[in-house]
Structures are given as structure tokens and as C-alpha cells.
Length: 169
Image (tube, rainbow, N blue to C red; front, side, top):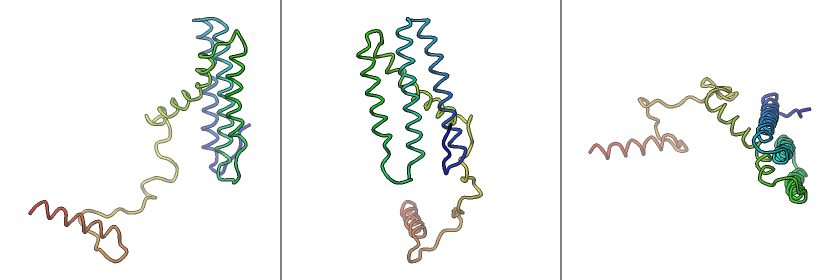
């Protein structure tokens, strides 16, 4: 089951999307590898993809616990997981190293697909709490700020005006 975080259900939906996407990509690529190559290559890929999925879950748990204080024990377990995958593939004669590595990186492809999906407008248009009505008012160009002590924007406006006057003269 997914952990609850202070960010609410949006983070949980992201984690669920990444897990489902990784599973779908893994099973689809497993079937494609079995069809195009042989069962050993497909099993090597699937083993790497499942280790990548466990790695993704540990990474999500580590990110969810960020800010809670203390050092996370999941950093060493994630590294140990990757090392165990390599040792298993190298020691087992029927497994192939390259398909296992590519299988492990399947979760990265899922993250890339999610990024493309949200960038091209398929996801939420604006993050929560960043709508235009919640932004601080911006100074207009017609009404320059007067420089006062401690008014950084006013000082910048004064410097910009001096720069523009120097260009015209």
C-alpha cells in the first residue's frame, strides 16, 4: 500500500502512476524480448525491471521520509539491491547482463514518459497554489518605483532608467 505524505494525494498518485507505468513497460518489453530473442534474454530483462521497480519504491519511500530528520537506511539498501542484481546476473550462466541493466533502467523511462506527458499539457496545467491570483502584484512600467532606503526594486528601476537615458543621448 502507498504511504501517506504531508503533500497529500498528489504525491501518492504520482507514485502509483510511476509504478503502474513501470509494470506496463516491463511486461510489454518482456513479451517483445521473448518474441524477438529468447526466453533467457526476456527473463534477464524482467529480473532487471523488477529490481528497478523495487529500487523505485525504496527511492519513493526515501523521498517521502525526507525532512523527517535522521539519515535514511534505504540509501545503502538501494545500492545493495543494484549490486545484488549484478552479482546474480554474473553468477547465473543463463542470465544476460545487458538486458538486466536495461530492465533496471525501465523505471527511468517511465519517469521520462511522465515528464513528457506533463510538459505537453496532459497533466495538471499549473501546480497547486501557483495561480495568477495568488502571485504578488508586479510593478507596471508606467509607474516607476521611487528609490528609498532598503527598496531594492526601486534602486533597480533607477539604474534601469539611467541606463536607458544613457542609450538615447
